[in-house]
Length: 392
Ligand code: ACO
Image (cartoon, rainbow, N blue to C red; front, side, top):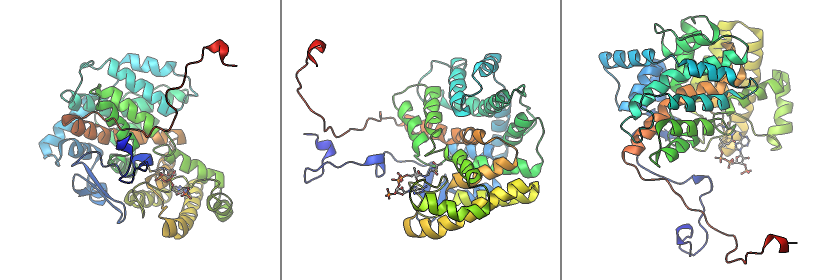
């Protein structure tokens, strides 16, 4: 009985958290969590962060190769043309209560965009690249419009003469960013674009594996990303730095909460990395540069908190238990220095990760098999149904 959940000795064999489940072959992403290595389609994250852009990285993830100049121009042009959202989406954004978390609002608007997509109702892999392009182009517009509406401001329409990163920052603030901030946002989108079969990619692919539609799959991914154990950790990490308040309070906070196990250090620990997350290294450099460029003592102070706390985590939790700082630890400081409110950090993650979600959907559904794992049942069987009036 239940042989699918038993080992050779007949004992339940449960892989809680699916840690050891290798569910398919893939050519998209490779993580070596013991040697701080991450590759998209064979290119190291350091190479891509130094040289690539979000547009080019998205092309690489979807089509498996770096584009030629003309391929990149035409892909970029298609993204730029598809940035604006219909009036119905702006109206919907205005109707969402302002106290709704932006990730929950993003989920709603992404779903609505599926209802007005020119290929709505089409299932399967054939319409995915075009739908993925349209939603990837529109997601920054939705996030920025939601953010401004939440602050009581009018949304700003996208511009087609700016890069994906610069246009997003422009729609958030009304100002075209200078080169440093544009590049910082662009690099952050490259770093967040993909990460193998993480919880949100898995959620996306689970929905896609039923041969459901592209938008339903992405909405699944947005829902999974929102949680504080996954994408929501970049917001939680910043809140934690603010809770600590200043570098002098770090040691006491760490002893009281982290060492005692009362609180997890947010932005630390990872299912796959047992050493430094290579994305965190790049984000840390950008955080440091953000302090220098902004010259704002508030940002310097919060950076000081993060730096002191990281030293403790790396010398204690990381060395002894493999709980090291991850991508979500440092990203918030860069966004904070850009003047972006904390609750927008996970939506920014979504703007980037849609590239990876879409790549996995296209790859998986092209060789589809419905995802349907089993559970080990340990409840009762064959109980007698007692009518409600006799249940005591
Ligand atoms: N701080 C303190 N202790 C931790 C942390 C942490 N951040 N993360 C894990 N641990 C401890 C757990 O308490 C547990 O200890 P125990 O064995 O004594 O009970 C042990 O490490 C294993 O923890 P699990 O939750 O089983 O590890 P898992 O691989 O399932 O979880 C996760 C990984 C969810 C990322 C976890 O490390 C965590 O909660 N981190 C904080 C949230 C976070 O930063 N998430 C972002 C991850 S990156 C991303 O998704 C983009």
